[in-house]
Image 1 (tube, helix red, strand yellow):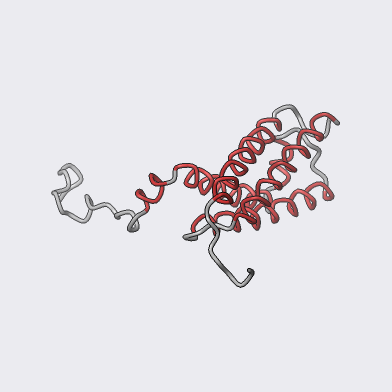
Image 2: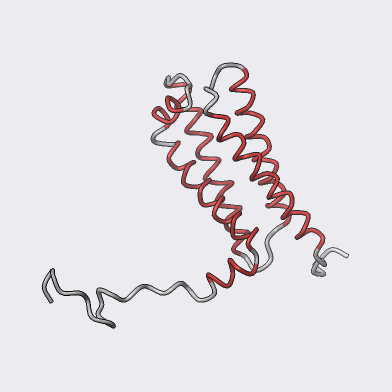
Length: 160
């Protein structure tokens, strides 16, 4: 085959890697859970970016980039990786932990408040409100999901 010839059906150049079994079915069976899993991945990735690239991100949101602010921003990024990873982990489990979903929602609510206060105090530019309102929307979705999974019949465990 030359560069001008199309790949033949069944040729390795045309084959696609299939989705893991049940990936699409899983997402379609519970779209809210799937959206929250994508948000958890975004949280992990953005947190991981904040750790080594805090200076440019701080400048992007209109904050001063000093050794102190970069250190604090990197620390916040590390916690974003941990909380986002924990949320993703529980969402991928057969039965997600209501406690993890609740605390993730509280974390997102706190992030909304902290960034909003930062904008009001002139620490961040109004552009940072995009991040704040994304966190607020995520918190609302997490609380909706938490209510749904908390209302489900509990499995009898050691308590009781």
